Image (cartoon, rainbow, N blue to C red):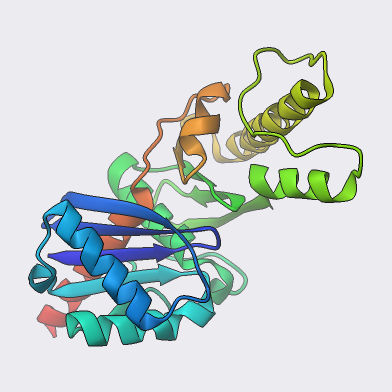
Length: 260
């Protein structure tokens, strides 16, 4: 079995694959203060609840945008699973050419998303990842990573509004019943929700105009199910796209190692 871990700024997602089948997955809050022991005990407890034997884990693949947690995960893997984890980064074979001015600037999760999207849906395509930031990743018809767009996520927008406008209350972020609010709370909910929807639709319109009418759009990330249904592009929601990308990249590197 393969354990894949995607460490994001807000959430950390774990998945267990047996072959190409995702047997179990969990989404946790990213805690920069947790120790290797805390991560190890938590993961093994989750495995017990999910009916996964920790001893069945034979490899570990990690993508991370929180560098301070990388040594913690390394220690956790060695101590609790007796494994040396693979981290998606320089030197890792992805099978995808990166057309970015500095390829090292592209987040590991964005590469995993792009690899999985092209493998599953073909190209040209755009992956919209609704996370702490809303990221747009463009993949060509030939499977090349062309670049993308990074915009504030709905949570970041909400926090900025709460912090900078003293008379505005904290509100639940949800889809409002109507676009025109008749009170402050409803007006803020409409602005946050449809502001994010309008941002995503506007960026996608411009990207698709450049990439062509056959471009497919795929949505993923923690807020995808919440926002994607309101988009005019109506993308399919693939919640485990990043985890599948990590599996695919791990398998490509394993095959390359066997050929040597």
